[in-house]
Image 1 (cartoon, helix red, strand yellow):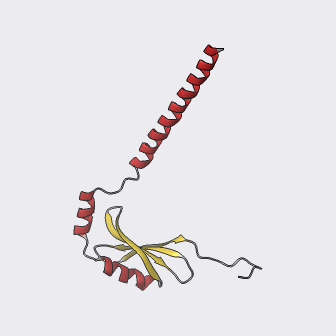
Image 2: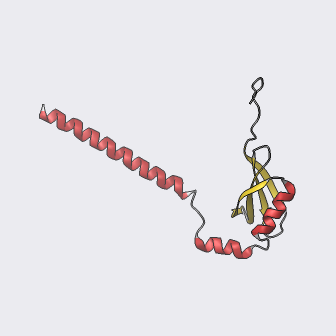
Image 3: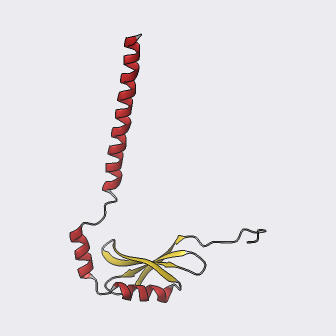
Length: 123
């Protein structure tokens, strides 16, 4: 009986180790593609911009009316762009990408959908 219990506990221990290692390796693989830019890359991006964050916010608000809730500098392919998040009056969040060198709007994308009324239901 003792040998059987030992075998069961050993199997549970091995299974736990395998699951734990799979989680660690999975996290390492997932985070390898989603790393934040290194400090040197951030400095290089910031020094290459001609448009300030204030200029990017101004340009974004020309294309989408609302309240700015965030802005950050990011790499979009080979371009450096300001990503400006705007909350609209319809309660949608729109991300507007503004080229950090030219100041042109590259694209806008709805991140959080507008709140729409449910047919037949009143607030």
